[in-house]
Image (cartoon, helix red, strand yellow):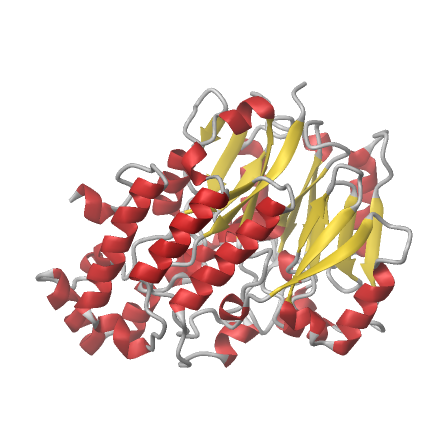
Length: 449
């Protein structure tokens, strides 16, 4: 067995980052719709977090943004003419459709795919399945480009297996790694993969949320587990509590986070917490490390405070000595009950010993915290060596990408700007340059035309 690490691949915020309030069920997204956004600040904030994690000794990668506005989608919907004419017609006839195909939501790469490490899979390769994100139109158009970006980032078929997204229907609604957590004693050992779902599509007797949609189905999770060749005895399926979905917890990673041998979650996160614990313990078996359940009581931190602060939309990272650091957004520090709880937590007898705060306001205002921004990929040394090296964060890449952002990004966008043909041209010029920096090849439709 090769020694292994867990890498974080963050989505680089795209040049059309804007607040259009497209994500029903996501409280922050709805509250900030129609406010001006700052794409340049958003991208630089994301890069700062990536570089900080690399400086802390973690393997950190970059995933490229998508082409936006997405002209091929507008053409598929009947808008014709030159690209500028397509934009003008869409702005006049269907402005919300234009806003949707201009969203920079691919920055939240926790939704990009589900990833299963080679230690868990039948064929001993790392498996990727892009999420169909069928519940939201603006995200349902992502999975094909996501697949191309993942293949260009993890190109070696001896080590990496790439699958197509599940069928794009509600029955197989798949939101990717935002509803998937892996537990293990060591990243290179066979682990336990936990899939969290909002509802069962085919079993209508199961409880469902009443106010907001359950975006992710049990059937989608079961399909991904089969496709990845996971051992059934080390795979656990758990239902998120419908009440917390109705309170604005649209993904599991807004109410729980797991890493290594720690599951950190809110008391109300799951429909049956005891069953979740029992199933995980059984799948965990006789591993040499203890499995920790760190349950935050509702009396200490309310669900509302979780949603407002994004306490659980944090990154839980392991150090070589077994201790863990929690990476949180600055909103956590500003929420008194949450910050007070964390100060107490790091004194307790769990591996979580440190909290690091990052300013991610541009992303947070659109409803995405530190955990939303990253896709976790556990790899052994041979697999890490097979990753496209141009996508791995270091001093040189950090400097290059900062200059690239400063050169190409606007510092203010409102919804009316999305119809501006010069924004499309600026974005394409930026992405064309980025594919050369990250050595991705021609991954965008405009490059293949």
